[in-house]
Image (cartoon, rainbow, N blue to C red; front, side):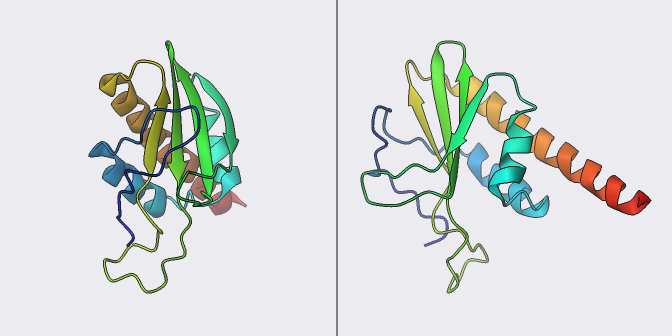
Length: 138
């Protein structure tokens, strides 16, 4: 169930979810850098131009997401929804309930979405490195 892409889980006011292949890499970086709290996700997001907010949305299938990060990229609003890590019976080595999902308002631009995912990965690494250096010098 961990990597399940729930394509019929709609977010009110947004286009149906997208699951670009770059989401798998984002999930691995999120886990490797311990960016697993709302506060940590927001720290990362604030380093990226166009960050609007974070919230806890619910999709049409009744799933309450862990957190969503919202960005404005040109004329498109991009919401990246992160699932909970509570799939304790996971058989694929991933404890997330389902795949990270991308929702958009406006005209979708896959290049902009992929660039945003890469920026998130880079900033997750940067924030993680800063925490490691800070802990190592105390």
